[in-house]
Image 1: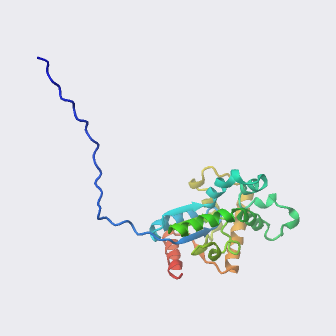
Image 2: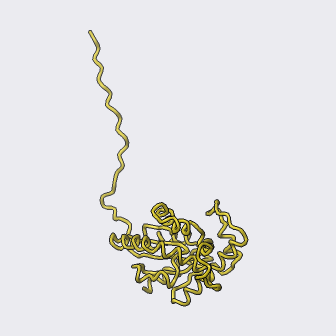
Image 3: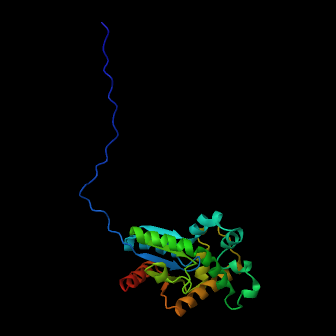
Length: 224
């Protein structure tokens, strides 16, 4: 008599048990703009603020620049590919001021980025998303947080300029190659951003100790 073999029932994958009563983590719809040159710790502080303030999204203007590169006219794309501190080299010398020509180059880049910055913030507002945006291009007086729909714009700083330079070449930027002349211009741009912050009454956050910087931003948010 032919033996009968029962088919083996496939073993199902372990089931993940979801706690239906668990509450989602509270989030905030704040929109924060962190300004400053490479080395001031924008990314590190931005990441810390996500957890501290219950935010969910973190974007840098560097990624915005890369995202729109292929859609820009060639002259704008070329300008936007430059560092913020040397973009002035592509501008007409006749329109450059001797005292703030480095800042003028960064402003020219910011003008190109304004529409996409506004679009990102508008989407965050529309969907109730908590957002940190960071970059050298959030220049006080050029980017008005109220006009753009942001809650706060602050300029970060590391007062020890040698430490700032060392941070600009930290392992977070392994492929960044900056000469001594680049470093000098980077510092000059940072000084000009601070001057713009003072002129337009935007806060400056000293970012030497991360915990202190997080507390400072939290106080600024609480004062809004």
